[in-house]
Image (cartoon, rainbow, N blue to C red; front, side, top):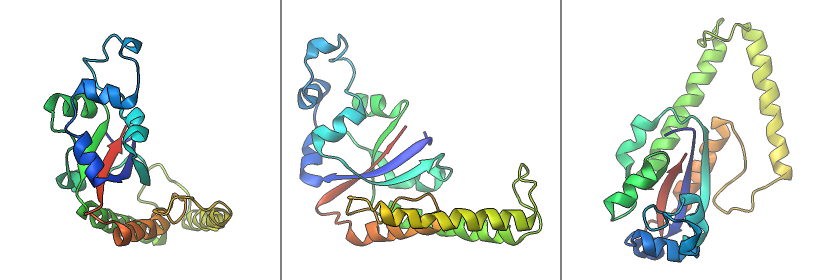
Length: 195
């Protein structure tokens, strides 16, 4: 997938029970009347509906277009015991268990992106063929975007996993470091969701 991807946590015991459910049991968990959808017993509930039913908590948003999917796929595995449910949840979207090592790999990827970005800013010409701005114009645009980080001090997240909302790799790597520090694999299951 790769348009938007997220890391979620869920209570490990609860999720281990949930991942054994069949489609009918999943619909019972969501609480929908089976008559609501003629195909309720043929297809699983939307994974966004399940977030609340099983207590998923979003801990990190990767933003648009995850371009490092190949590097992290070794840390992802099917979330459900039932192969048909896995197929349904991963045909057009993603609902996968993520090994805790994915956090460190993402930290490394973000560090590399920051280094690459700053090296590119130091070049006379951008490596992006569509960016024809001068080096000075790119540096000024970068400075302006970095000044906007302060607005997040006024809007701190209520999520203990997240240090702040942002889009800059050099800031978000600290949130990943924080998650790596507080994530307890004995208590939580880490999930990769995407659409």
